[in-house]
Length: 228
Image 1 (tube, rainbow, N blue to C red):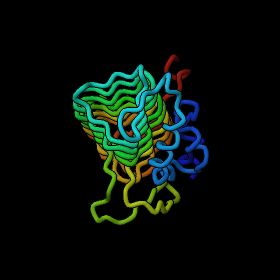
Image 2 (image 1 turned 45 degrees about the vertical axis):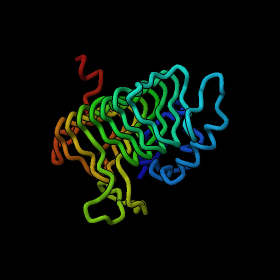
Image 3 (image 1 turned 135 degrees about the vertical axis):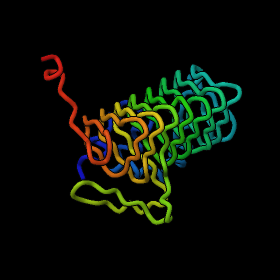
Image 4 (image 1 turned 90 degrees about the horizontal axis):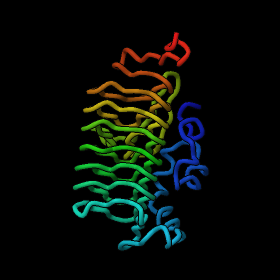
């Protein structure tokens, strides 16, 4: 499915994980290699810009990390990121430049591109969030199916066997997720799509659309149409 490919979803210039992502076809394929990649990349980072804090944890000197936050390795916190009060980064996480990880937000096995915001009570696990994507307060990724079977990505006309038991959500660049929403296992959201608050989302959503409910997904109006 072309809409699920890395080259369709993301601007790879907006992440320190470009090398890893460019080796794969689909974003969920990076999750198995993420921990090792962080350890290798971290050891090469410029010590004038990044400081190693504990085992396999590298934090940019320009990042703001609250004293009450927890960061477990392996992890890279990139330049000017904000890790706020009581954030919980369990490990195997890349937090991009100027990204925000907020109060009581939990991350595990994730890539947050530059300027991603997960600022209030979010859980993001086994996921990749594209440039400037935003998850509203209380929205979460659900990364394991209730029957514990392997996750399948289901598009409108095709399916992909991922071989993964844990798979949260792949959000393209500029995605907006409304407050209180749940992104079910295997969710892939195309770039610049908006999801209404309190939604339960699954499957593949097209880019540049608005998700109102499972039966109503509409294409965004173009700027030309809006101006007229």
